[in-house]
Length: 179
Image 1 (tube, rainbow, N blue to C red):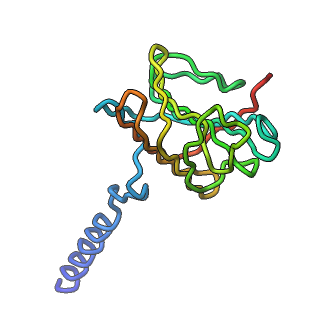
Image 2: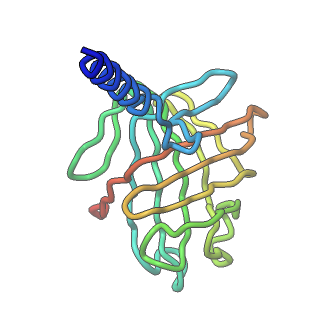
Image 3: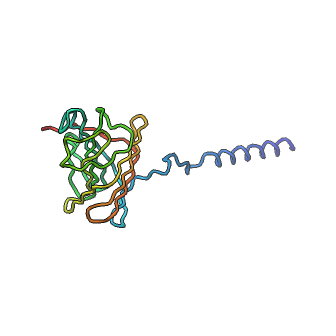
């Protein structure tokens, strides 16, 4: 009888330990939430993609990669990468020395300076919702990459004086635009 009580106690203890160690609150996102903050409002980012314009567009030594992060309500054409619908889009025209979006911090190099484009710069950073478009001439786009997963943070101040911040962690679909 004493052995049965001891065995029952051990069974309950092991079962309890299993419940404690198998918690669903493990957080492996390193604090990155898929969110866009603009004009004192937050929006959930539902996805992102890259339009790959390739090598030599506007600059003979750089690749032109357009980054799009978008909120719920936007629809993506799975063949072209075109967006439509109701939602917000953050767009960054990035310049890279490689054919892939490389890890690093991209800084502003506004349009009108195509001849002087440099690797790890952006010539355009824009937020739009179909009706309104705001340009950001100052800011940063920081890219991290592990396998097929990207960690992206964007920060800037728009021509309207309002702050933009965005963070995204996930995969990015890649499209080659038809010209």
